[in-house]
Image (cartoon, rainbow, N blue to C red):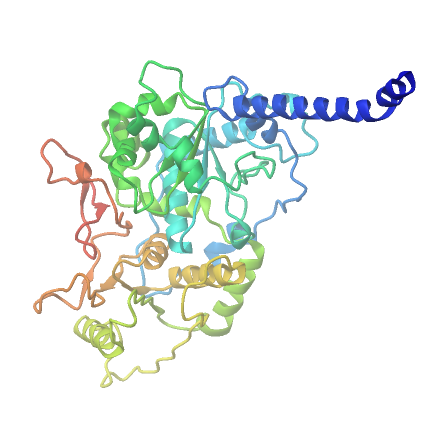
Length: 471
């Protein structure tokens, strides 16, 4: 019996003890993880702060050829008034933001001391896109403006299909969400939305305005957002949102018309943009400089085919339902538009040569493909170098090209089987300005609702959408 007891203690018992110890440790770890992942936990903010102090392995080239040389690719003599200039107030606000981003943002300069980066008084907004490039650019610009209005640091989670499209916009820092961010691959998941979204919080009534704000909150504003999600655009809810240190905005739309409808932002927006019809133009020109790789593709095509043209006319036609919208019907609209408004030279005119070039031939949209997005970005930027733009209804791709160019496009009304137009509808319409359309605003943001005022109106090409039209 004594020998067996000794063997038990020396061998099998120690194994059982280790098993019990491991099991106990696992339980403690699970309890700690549950406490850590609860947004009400005081430990919840810790991994987010740690992520900001971690160095990214990539080294960013401080030079940006497009930012330096884009003035060399201006429009031809037939074209435009000078580009609108940003207000001094906007320029000062951007400089202040750059200081904030350097102080609070991810540690991108290995020579800096991590202890200099204090995040106690910093707030962040993470942009997580999912749709096509045009939508993503509109969503990115909207999120950056929200960051300016609320003194938050913008971080982006682009994914591999958005790598190397743009130059870093903020000096001596990076806008990329750190790879060590604990929820990096969950920001758009249904489970994450169910646990951390603003709409879910209101719907379950788990929080009221008096309780402590969570450390992280998802703002879900995609086209299928519900009535609770839409309440983000109510002024009375912004006080609570402001107390949340980390926001994750999941959307791909031009939210800015709704921001102009909110009294809490109206006066600041009017100071930032005295000319309220150039909001997107200024944001895009500041944020979205093509990377050196993209710029090489853009300028290479431009020099080869466009540089010697007397006038450049850009066409961007998007058909959303190709199986139901016939090619002859689309061509009829295009020809009617170009002939009626004399966009193309008539055959009887003496000066006559017309050449047609197409930079890419993708045919349809591809998700998760970096080379596809690189070609799309090249197309958008080449279109923005046009003297005259003809775009298609509902196309965010066209909105972006026109906004960057600062050109009011002719919008071809593509036949839509779901929203058919009457026989007397025009084949195309000149946009009232260069502002994009927000396709899915909440019902209470429409200017024809009682008690709502502001510089917005319904879009020319999307009857249920909103766009900024000036004061």
